[in-house]
Length: 178
Image 1: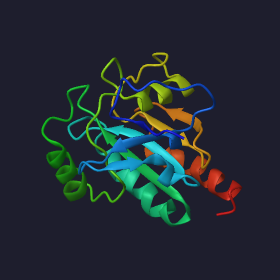
Image 2: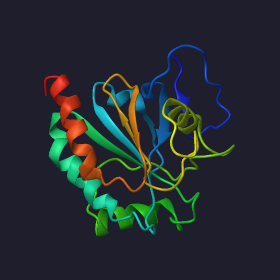
Image 3: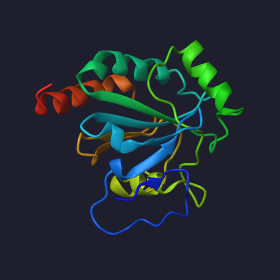
Image 4: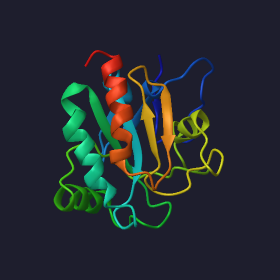
């Protein structure tokens, strides 16, 4: 199966039933990460920003990672400056996340989440679960809960604090016997 690079917005989306595991993304350090490496894990995919009203949610996301990480759950953080809330370089973003919020979950390279510059992975995510603006990502900290099979289970609006997602994560992990 061909991996679709999340950094390549021109990659065609082949027919058939796609999952998040069919994509790859560039890490914040520049390496290509196949998202199939997370197959079997429950994931929370989040577009993050370091200078946003919702940036303190990084603490809550890290709390979820600590609470559920050893049971097959991972937060995947995708910084975006599309809403002009994450200036600077990837290194600057990583520094804020790890130093100020002590994040340990994987961070990916900055990306657009809407429009022609958005990687195909984000077009796929938006198509799976619509939000209040239809398929568009309204703002930073939109969250997609993805099942162990790579299918999107639920989309959460930016104001939803990570703690409110904990119960749903618990249910998914219990369903998997973890």
